[in-house]
Structure formats: C-alpha cells, structure tokens
Length: 337
Ligand code: TRP
Image (cartoon, protein in one colour):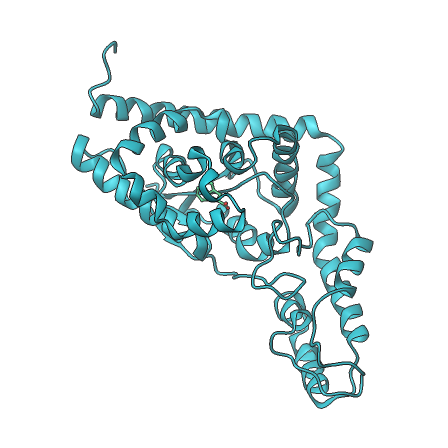
C-alpha cells in the first residue's frame, strides 16, 4: 500500500543568482526531501512576487527565471522527482489570492514584521506598492493552490506561513473545508553570514558568493572577507568567534579536525589570514566545482532547461486547476459546471 506523502512547497524570487547561503540554508534540504518518499516536493520560481519589488525590471526577472532554474538543476534538484514550476505559469494562484484578500484586514497585512522590515530596507515608505504589501497573501495562495502541508523556510518567512494558516482557518470556516493547514519547518542547514560579516548573505546587501561564480571570483571574494579587524599581524592572537572565514570553514570544510587545529593556532597567534583564506578558497571551490560543471551543461542548452520548467509548470497547473475548481464550488462560484 502506498503511504500518502506530504506536500512540500517552497520557492525563490528570481531577482538574482542563488548563492552559498541558499545552498546551505535551503537547497541541500530540498535535494534530501525529494528522495524521501514521505514527501512530494514542489519548488516554485516566484516571478510574480519578484515584480512586487522590481516592477520596472522585466528583463532582469526574465533572465533570472532561467538563472534560478539552472541553479536548481546544478545543485541536483531533479525535475523527475521535484515539480519545479514558474509562478505565472499557474494563474490559478492569482485567482485564489484575490479571494484570500477578502479574508484578511489591511491592517493585518501591514503589521507583518517581514513586510515592515522590507519596506524599510528598500526605502519604499509611503510609496510602498499595493502589490508589495499584499505579497504575503499571494504567497499563501502559492502554498494553498497545491494544498501544501510543509513549507521549509528561514525565520524571516515564518510570519508568511502564520498568515497562510490563518487564511486556511478562515477559508475553511467560511466556505467549507478545502485546505489543510500548512506548517513551516526550519531547514536543517541554517543561516550563513555574508562575506562582509553581516548577519545574512543576501543579494540586496551585495555580500554573496554565487553558485555560478568562477573559481577566480570566489578567490577574490574570499580574499576580501571579514575576519578579525584586530588581527593585524600573523603573530597576533586572533578571534574565531564572529570571524566569517572560520564560520564558512565550520560549514563547508570536510576536515573538521584540521579546522579545530587551525582555530587553536589562530587564537594563540602565529597564523595569518592569508593561509586561512587560501584554505577556504580551495574548500569552497571543491564544493562549487561539481555544481559549476553541471550548471554549464544545462547553460549550454537553455532550451532544455526551459522545457523541464515548462513540464513541471504543466504538472503544477493541473493540480491547481483541480484546487481552484474546489474553491469555486465551495464559494458558490461554480455557475456553469
Ligand atoms: N518569499 C520567498 C522569498 O523571498 C519566496 C517565496 C514565494 C516562497 N512564494 C513562496 C517561499 C512560498 C515559500 C513558500 O524567499
């Protein structure tokens, strides 16, 4: 007897290339989940959501839909196991989000802490686009349209999933049960600091190492990485805590015994940053090399990558069609069927 698997949905905005923070924080987890028979995984490229803060950059978004798809394929997301789709290819999401907007107050949307932070960071102020303020509702529709039950997301996305749960309760109570309540789960990786030492690697902050960076680009970025500003000469004792080079070695270096030894040396004094950074460059390039190779194979044949995306989008759309039929019936909108 087949065990019923749980539906997992997650995704990314295609506004920049994916980076090491994504690899550690979410991509590795998705690759694991797709091989676990307990889960059925959907991964969505959120192009409509990208328009909520980049409405004037259609070329950029179009280009990054392909770039993100290449990143997915390169890290081992397998379209035969995972349904990879593009958000605007499933317009039922838009329809559902229009209905969901009536089940939440404007005030409730505007107090969402993540939205508030983003409005500040992006300097939107009073000019915040209405579509941007509403994106959490649209995001709930992303999840609900495939009846997602599990949503692996970082902490900043937790309020979005809370809202989705509230919308499910409200929808089911008002119109009858259509949706399961989705749950957020924290991926087993974690948050990676930016190369500049700030708390998060993020394209907005410009402190990323992209999965598509060349070996030389990686070397350059590592050379300029934040270590310990008090560690001027190799002979000086240095700090390991808050030192991004050590943080990355902790995460990516397969020889943790050696890392422990280097930490002792560094703290005692007598170990220069150059030695450490040379090691980290090698470690990261070892991680990235197979990804780069696979990425290049797909990048050489973008039509194939797009075909795979189209196929996944068709599968997601078929599921969405069924869900929206149930939504319309529950809402008494099924006049002609
Ligand atoms: N908001 C997410 C981000 O900025 C991307 C996203 C869109 C998403 N729809 C989603 C994540 C649905 C999880 C579930 O990274």
